[in-house]
Amino acid sequence: MKLREYQEQGADFLYEHDRAMILAPVGAGKTAMTLTAMQDLGGRFLVLAPLRVCKTVWPVEQPKWAPKLRLAVAVGTPAQRAAALASDADVVVTNYDNLQWLATQPLKFDAIVFDELTRLKNPSGARFKALHKVIDKIKIRWGLTGSFTSNGLEDVFGQCKIVDQSLLGRSKGAFLQQYFSLINPDYGEWAARPGALEAVMQRIKTATFVLEPGEYADKLPPCYMVEMRCDMDDRTPYEQMKKDSIAKLEKDITALTAAVAINKLQQIASGFVYDENGEAHWTGSHKFDLLDEILTENQGANTIVVYNYKEELAELQRRYPNAKTIDGNVEAWNDGKIPLLLIHPKSAGHGLNLQHGGNKIIFMSLPWSLELFEQTVGRLHRSGQKHDVWCYVLMTNKTVDERIWASLHDKKTISDIALNELKQ
Image (cartoon, rainbow, N blue to C red; front, top):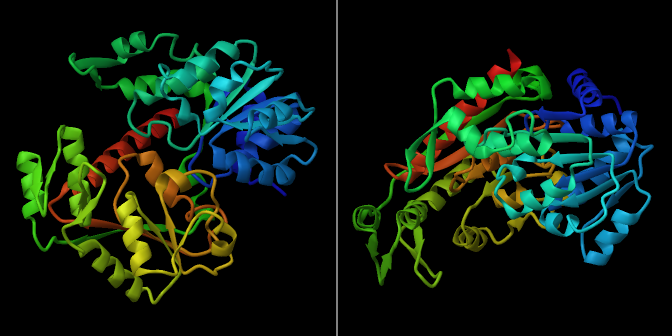
């Protein structure tokens, strides 16, 4: 197979830089770029990736782009992982959940690749610390991500440190002092200073290959975001929870903290709320009625429906008994045999190619994470999609749904500024 021009540029960038990051949107072919650079460079590579990516992306893409390399997947039992690690494979792929185990093993590698680099955004995490201690002797480090500043500028520090700590320094405290102002000492909340984002992006520019959507958008059909709004039949439970952190239904539903209250408000906006025992109490069917209308209007076209809560999944399965979840059904979906596919952002956010089975996706409720949102949409809107993609976001008027949607847009703005700075 032949790389596209921008993919060749990305592969060349990796080949020429021992410490480098590839910042490219979902579906742009980061794995293809990296495998090409691996084969050209030679040596032995350790790849860290989410579990699903380990199983369904690297083993599938390797024969296409680096057929001369031997690849082993180190997942499963400790014995299975150890066997893969001790094999003569040129590339060993394992998942981030194994990092603490990996830190106790002999690591005979010339290079390490961090696929979905944002998994290492927290330098205080146990997995980050375990890994950081054992990779000092690994000279070549490459990071791949599509959402560099997914939840704000703070995320950049840990990702840069694990790739090359000379980019932004060794201490996150010093990084915060330089680029942020402490706005809430009690909770350790920091706000980026004016111009901080631009300054940080300039510092890491030489180590970062950036692919803007415009550089490959002509290869993809457009993706249309459509807000679909509805009203609650009875706003009383919502207003009670918002004002007093309690909703009086057949039993009182109480939120003990502000974070819990926000979560329960999102649930009520979707038509139900969980009590302290995890039992769902329904307050309305407005979003599911709206979903019915969309599916009917689209005349049964193959559609992905994204849920965030178990009760949403349960109701979808009650209403649409022929709907399928993602497990074991990727091939059937891509063959066009599944009219309704139900997915959760955390289980389908990375490593799934779903672009061949349909071109419509509906969010019943939104994740707070921009990365999860973009990655989930990117399962359809990626290379190989032949039709315009339609993404429907269901929102209940005058609820926290609107706040979450606005938050995702704000984070998108941060990402856009970061991209612009790196490209200048």
